[in-house]
Length: 412
Image 1 (cartoon, rainbow, N blue to C red):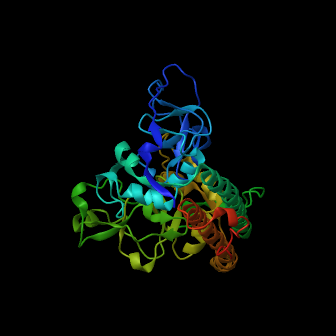
Image 2 (image 1 turned 120 degrees about the vertical axis):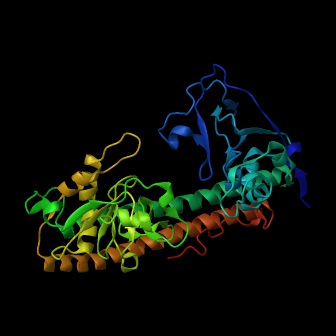
Image 3 (image 1 turned 135 degrees about the vertical axis):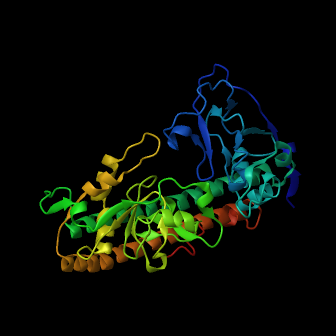
């Protein structure tokens, strides 16, 4: 029977500081484990002086105390520097580092961490502020400790099986990227907006729409109300071709009355100004009469199909122009004047409607394939986690499990 032993008897915390040592900066990711920071981001480290950073050695276990409950734990593959807030744990002679790597990232262990989090709020409700695991609480968690031979067997098995799953996941991501590219090419070719074509037949947006205005730019705190107000769209509610109504704010009657120009009508096209600049979506009937905050509002008029305009504005063609004319070094911002100048095709309404009909058919087929690949990737992720958890908790004998079909339940 496998013994359950508190972790503090199997590893010891190490607190060696960098000083003048020149070592690569490492990060701990819930998805990738411990990797060189440059593989995750090209941003510079927050601290210019790294002398207080902790030093880790190969096979040390690194724990991101704030994200450990999400699986941000892993074995270091090299000497390096990590955040001074992280824990560096050096395994003793009773436990294999790679076994701990898998055990600590299992659903069973992260569940144990969740029960010991220190912070304000609830993890289940997603409102814990500054959640972190205390080193003493972490070390008190009892973990299964089979023989060293069995630990190595489990680690070797999981190396092979997780690599196979990761390869399948990578292939699906590559397929999704190709589908996204194909989707854009289909849209651009159907709209006649291929990059190699001339600008013949394109006119500035302002000449083919009824109006272009902007939503409330400054929203006094007193205008926000909990209930009984007017729904107001923000940039975070608008995605390319879709409006999310699950997180709408409400503004008072006073705020709504003072901003008549930003009141929305069914069929208006709203465009994000800040953040995901250029994302455009048609206002549905359920939001008729609502207001909006810091969004560009385009009123197509009779001669322009709202859905056609939505396709145009969400194309790579329009996105490139939005990017070109956005300002701001920290967060991109797109203004109304630039919106009015975006050249779009000037064609009869009947042709626009036919193009929308064609695109709905062609794009929906590609979107269906995209969703299937998303689902397959999700199932692979779930299967990977379940496999790791089952192996490290002894739910099956890994010596007889080689060659198991890792794609079970992950069909289209």
